[in-house]
Every structure is written in structure tokens, then in C-alpha cells.
Image 1 (cartoon, rainbow, N blue to C red):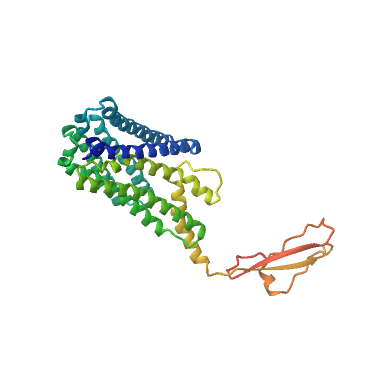
Image 2 (cartoon, rainbow, N blue to C red):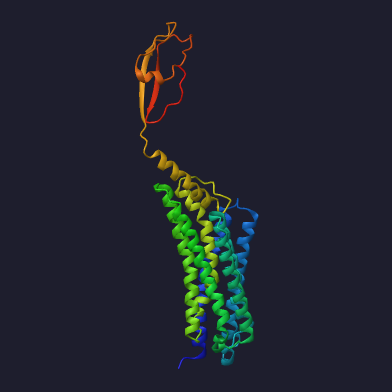
Length: 347
């Protein structure tokens, strides 16, 4: 028969390993952000620092929660069956981090789509999941036994379900808007496709993890859901940081140089909203054929007036005055565009 430590703290230990692993990735992402995007606005830097601080706090609390019963209270099996107040900080911090990240992406949806209903729906789901996370933390303090966690399953369902819905809405809104602005140009469509892939990957990962966490919580009282619950906060922060740090990749891939945008939405706005204009221009000009016809004429500078050609196409060309101080023959070039209405030319 498995011990209480293996049944309860086995999944917790595995979840903690993934939590620390993702925290290491978050450290790298944060270092890259502050190294590359030095020109970002102050509020954005403070926002990233706040997320990193919450991630660090969450990781420290999870380590302390595992350390106390397995090391400090080693041999006391009664302590293995109860969750302490430290464990209750995990759903609270996860809900706070999810709220920050989802509100940021809701702001991005507003900037790109100007869809107020979509933003309001995302914000509503995000606030609901935050309330569910705070309620779950309070419920852990009221019912600390692991085997009785399903007694407050309603509040957990609110937390995880609304979290998954908010992530799915963000993904659908951004992908729908991006797909509408494809132009047919390989360079711009390649940028749009990369943004779509990144949006789907980051959005669906968090939504899928929340759904699996909820299913396992409802299906089994053994604590198996904690394998997916503990790393959830790191998935949110890493999804946001990967979105911010990928701005340089879009610009480098498009050959725009090293000037990285200081606006987190400037790359998306510039390459997505501007694509519709390029698409209209391509549709209008794609059926016109322009042929450049060059005509060369040798003119003797010594003559008082340069001779005029009787060719029909030169009637629409400009004759440029030759300075009288020139002493050598010069070559005059005229160009006529066939396929477009020529502008008025001075005879």
C-alpha cells in the first residue's frame, strides 16, 4: 500500500520540479528582456519586474511547503495529510499572475482590434478566475485536509474554468484578427504566420494545462492534479515574456535592423494594421504593366537650339535645357511609361 508521502507529495514534488524548471526559463527571459529592450517604457519594465517578483515568491513558497513536512517534520505522517497556509499562497499567486497576464493580452487585443466587447469579455473571465483563485486559497485554510479538497470543488471550477476560457478568447481574438490581414506578400504573410503560431502556442498551453488540472481535480482526490497546478503560474509568465522577447525576432527576420521597438504592440500594429493598406495597393496595381522606353539623342551644344525629334513618344517627354557653357556633345535621355496615364509634361 503506498504511503501518504507518495500519494500526496509525489505529485507535489513532480509539480515543484516543473515549477523550478520553468522558473529558470523565466530568469533567462527576464534577463534577455532587460538586456535587449532598454528603450521600453518605464511602466512596461515595472510590469515585467512585478511578474518576476511574483514568480520568485511563488517558487519560494512552494519549496518551503515541500521542505517543512519532508525535512523539518520528517517522520510525522500526520503533517503529510494537511496543507499549511504556505500551500494556500499557490492558488492566490497563480490567480494574481494570470490576472496580470490576461489583462495585458486584453490590452493588446484592444490595441489591435478595437473590439470593446471582446476586451470586456476577456476582462470579465479574468476577474472571475482571480476571484476563484483567491477563494480557493481561503478554502485551503478552512479545509486543510488534502483528501477533502473536493468539498470546495465549485470555487476551484470557477477558478480554472474561467482561466481556460479567458486564454481561449485571447487566442481566438488575436488569430482571427491576424488572419484577416494577410496580403499575399510572402514577407508580410510570413511575419503574420509567425505571430499566429506564437499566439496559439502560448495561449493554448495555459488553457490546456488549466483544463487538465481541473479534470484531474474532479476525477481523483489523490492530488494528481497538483502536477499541473504548481507550474501553471510559470506558464503564464513565460507566455508573456516569450511574446515580448519575440519582437526582435520579427524585426530581424524582416530585415529592419537593430532598432527594436519600445512599444510592445508597435511591431504587431505596424505589420498587421498596415498590411491592409499594402493589400489594397497590390490589388489595384497588380494588373498594370509598366514598360520603360528610353530614347537617346546626340545634341550638338554649339547649336542655338537643340533639334526636336518627330517621334510620337517624344511628344510626351520633357526636353531639358543644356547650359551654353558646355562645349562637348552630351547625351539626353527621356523615359516614357506605357500602361499608366502620364503626367502633364512641359513641351
